[in-house]
Length: 238
Image 1 (cartoon, rainbow, N blue to C red):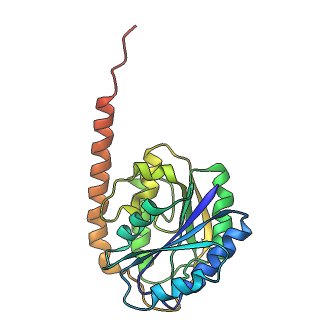
Image 2 (image 1 turned 60 degrees about the vertical axis):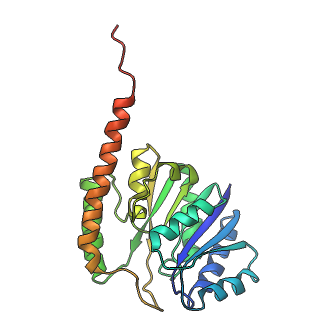
Image 3 (image 1 turned 90 degrees about the horizontal axis):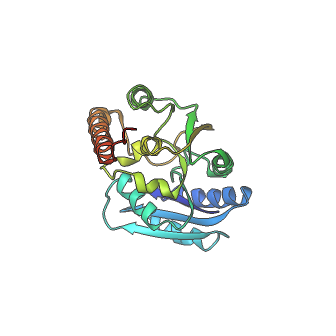
């Protein structure tokens, strides 16, 4: 089983080299082969140079795909999935809020009983946690998917990508798409580390837009489910 560790980045020159190094160590600890795929989403700093320098030092193949302009994390992840070579894809941030050296072996081990493993952040604080709790409440009570942190690191079989609806922020609903398609989902607790460099690309001001996106995605998936049900042949009466 080859693994693609997918790292989307934008202006992460201070952390990307260490994220790559720790990801390589995580794959080694898990006794897995594969690649580290970095998608540089239009960085204006030295992120590209740092990736190329680190790729010469690590024992794992490191590939770089680059957007000339910043297109957002959803587009970066979509590019990454379409370029991934692994049978299993793991999404890890490049800012070290996750520790790949710890999280990669943990999530890969959990894949023995699942098609998708979702990380649940422990120790998270700050204003963003309010929006996250509301979002995950809706996930459980409206979408019917029993996870506590649907928008964090994930490890999944690549065939799940065939069931993604590529909306502008589809990555928030990856667990939902997998659940709707009947894949097995497991949630594991992982430690969270406060960002030490740079600044977050997210904020509580995105909450109203996130809620509208939630409604659009729910409507689209419900619509497709009804269309699929109508396309099925009617049972023959005995």
